Image 1 (tube, rainbow, N blue to C red):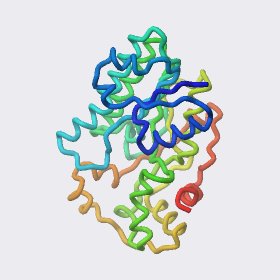
Image 2 (tube, rainbow, N blue to C red):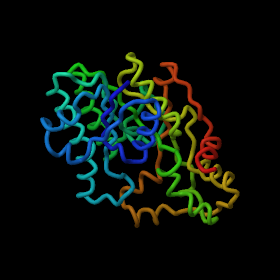
Image 3 (cartoon, helix red, strand yellow):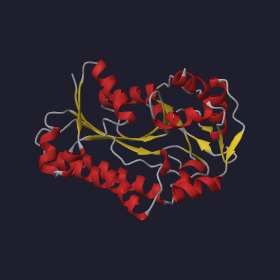
Length: 286
């Protein structure tokens, strides 16, 4: 039986993972924000006898990016991960594996990327993802096997991107963001859970992995998939300038995208249950 300590365990992804771990008979407990802010020494005690450490924490991305909020996003990922790794370094009996997260926002919005062949984004998200990963990888220096999953957009029931989209689509006022041509790399929660289980149980899994379906799509295709599944029209278009007015620089997350392939996962023998976007959307909303 694995004992798992998790940051961000009450969020959308974390709650899905916690339920899956508990269904397997594993002990999953959350590390609260107060535990992290109490410093490495107290945090090490909170991690305790956990043999798996999962790091999912991070402030929401889709929010207007003031300079102050950028600092909050950075601290909630990079600084928090640094504290977590410092706590692990202090422990006599360390977790056997740290699974930390990043995002496909690490990559440029142009081209097709995998873990071996890519262009890193030069904006705020790309730099933050880079620093976030570097802090997590320092756990290797303490002898802890380290896995980093670069998430695509996570599709699942009860939250995430689809929850925000469902109401307007059900009302028949859904549509593309801009012209809808921007890339859309995604992963179904079921495949995400299976990838985490693989990372926990297979010692050869180490380093950075793109966690997204092997068939990247577009915003237009997502719009069509939702409209078809719900049986509703989706002819509208959300102009980019409207998103700029609401979110400022953060609108880039919606108007741009990354086309990303999970090469290392497939090389490791992982097989996706959901590789077709239409099937994934249908499974999540019906």
